[in-house]
Each structure stands twice: as structure tokens, then as C-alpha cells.
Image 1 (cartoon, rainbow over the protein chains, first blue to last red):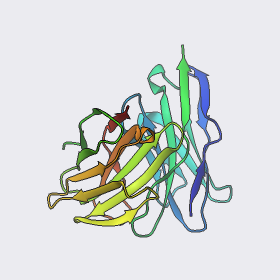
Image 2: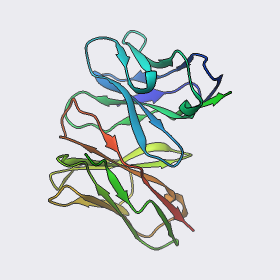
Image 3: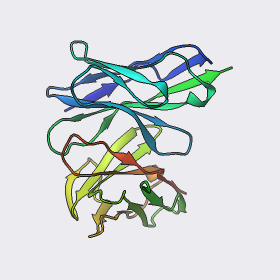
Image 4: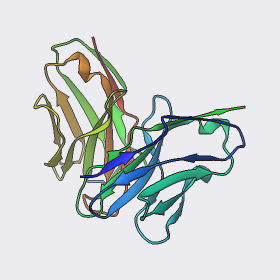
Length: 114
Length: 114
């Protein structure tokens, strides 16, 4: 089985500051990794995904994440956040064979203030 | 290309009633998955349908059921509603049931049981 740990339930940051949202996963098999963002009263929007290849993945809205297999981590970063980045961020994993459900972390609320 | 459409967006039901939620996937997508999101349990997988067949099921009681039609539209039904069923129900569609592919989420149906 897979599991995901998002260590921070809430991350406050000032506008234009850099941010890192942490994600660690556990799995006995190879997985694919995803970051989703959820704005209030909305569904989930895919920010980026790691399937294979380069461990540095670039996504939408200036976000990027680095897959670290030895540390089983997939931290999300943005060099300069905007007020509009205020949202809930979910890290998710799924096995890389056949259909497998997405297993989500508990989410990190990013609060960007002026 | 239209995204995943879930109807209705909001629903209020009384304990003991039943409810049906609808999900129209992205055109051409054949896999539809359902997730329940609550503050306490986070995002949990309910079930997945592919070509009108339920392929995977999460750990939910039999009151939760679903189906998929030949046009890939899916419905989920919850019978004998309980207060704890209050949640945001999210539908996700994928092109196939195999990887690599990403899941696209709808905006969800917020169900409130009173």
C-alpha cells in the first residue's frame, strides 16, 4: 500500500517570498507522484506530475517539484508567491502499473499575505 | 474541450434519504473515479468505472454505489444517508485505466445531510 505525508498543515508566507511545501511518500513499488491545488469550493487542479525521467518537474503557475527517490520525497516549490496562490495543496501518489487509485496526503494550506 | 462536469453543485438532504450524483467526463475519457473529501478523513477513493464496469472499489459501505453508462457518464448513489456522509464528492476522469495518464477532476458536489 502507498501512503503520503504532508508534514505541514498550514504554511503562512508573505507575498513575493519563496515557499516549499513538503511531501513524503511510502511505497514498496514504483509510483507516480502528483501535486494538485484546490481553491475554495472548487475541485482539484493538477499542478504537476512526476512519471519518469528528470527528477525536476515544472508545472503550471510557476511551481516546480523535485523527486528524490532516496528520501522518498516530492517537495513543491515556488520562488515567489502571489496572493492568488492562497489555496490547499495536495500531494498524491499512485502505483505505476494498471489502474490504481490516487492516494492523497492530508493537504497543506498555503496562506499568502501582503 | 469541456472539462469534467458534476451536477448538482450543492445538495441538501435529510438523514435516511437517498441521493444520486452525476458526473460527465471529458469527451473521449473512459475511466471515471469518485472520491469523497471530508475535513476529518481527507480525500478517500470510493470507486472507479471503466467501460461500464466497476474495476476498483474503496473501503466504503454498500450504501455507496455507482454505475457508468455507455457514453461514459457516471452516477453515484448513496442510500440511507447519514450525517457523516456530508462531504464534497469529487469525480475524476482519465483517458484510459492504464498509466501514464492524469486524472482531471470536476468541481465537485457538496452534499449536506441534515
